[in-house]
Length: 502
Image 1: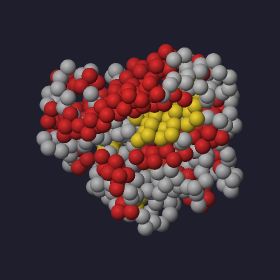
Image 2 (image 1 turned 90 degrees about the vertical axis):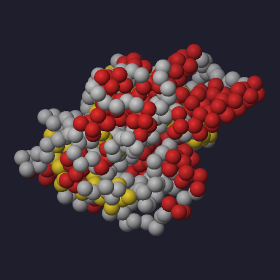
Image 3 (image 1 turned 120 degrees about the vertical axis):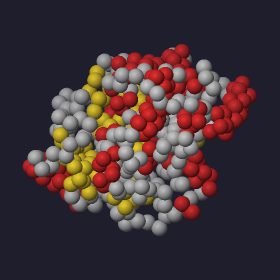
Image 4 (image 1 turned 45 degrees about the vertical axis):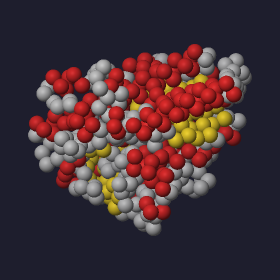
């Protein structure tokens, strides 16, 4: 075990963690256990959302490094969706879409304007009257609680839970707080949502989670010193190059720093996986496994210079950043997310291959629970309604391989949309002007624009984008008068701690 390179960055978290554990221990005698694994009624729901988790960095999605042994095992016990697209490339609109079954343009929690820049303008909150999964389950008699480590979850989503706790801490600590609530509220149906932020910058995994990943990059000659690791908790400072402003990504310096950054990212996933494994073990020890549906998903992935050339040619991020992070593009590394579930009601040993949307999450969970689905949104044009709201996928009698899946709502840059149909994916401006068309069957990494070779496909997907624009429901609109100066100081500080609102 080597010295913790991130100790100076996590000092406040560790102090707060110690105080929380002390308080929990002191209060435990007066907070009796209320678990009932033999009660009648619908199953409980424990839903884990992992911020900034790429699907292709999990073993169960084909990754070759040992990031996710627990998730790999648990995914094999239930249903895994292999081809899931997020409705948006950053936290607030994507989580809101997952928990409402609506596109961002319908639920309203996104950044507006012809060119977005979240450093200068805060996003809008969830629209009044939008029914979330938590609100819907409360109406079915569930106790609800959210334990979240990203403050954007409190732009309308957290408020729909009966009990909510913000903890900017590592996965194990957030899970421990959720377990304590479950221990005290398990005598009737409950919905516990847990948002883990470890893969989001600044990435500061524990030494025990770093150890499996650093030797390989060190053996290749990369600098894995404490100073370098600390500098790459973000995208580079001090001795590390700024990966977001690299002039030549093929240079040895950039490639070495990128390898270290990826090792840190993988270690943070391992840290999350370990916490999920501990949560699962505790539910089983409490005999809640047979009465609790569990699911894990992510809101979006992360770019690691995958499309640096496209970013350089477009040059549309107002921060001057190219090819790293999230929120400013609609490529696969940001939009393809994991979703796996197990427990009562979930088909076992199933791997679903057809393209689905993260908007399908809430309707499908409700279907597995045997509960009424979310209220349908009225007023949508008939032919576009299936594209803008989620579907229940629990009974895949005849999955549609050519279903249209949409994504929108950048945080940095122009008003872009992505239209996916089967093997084809279009990235375009809101008015339908194409930026690139990809054939995912022959080009899974989305590196070759085939728009000139496939004019009919291009015209078809462009027409869908234009019809979507014409509904008036897209995440667009004029820039509002909101300013970060109008945001509560505590909220602003929490976001700054996560690298937002600089």
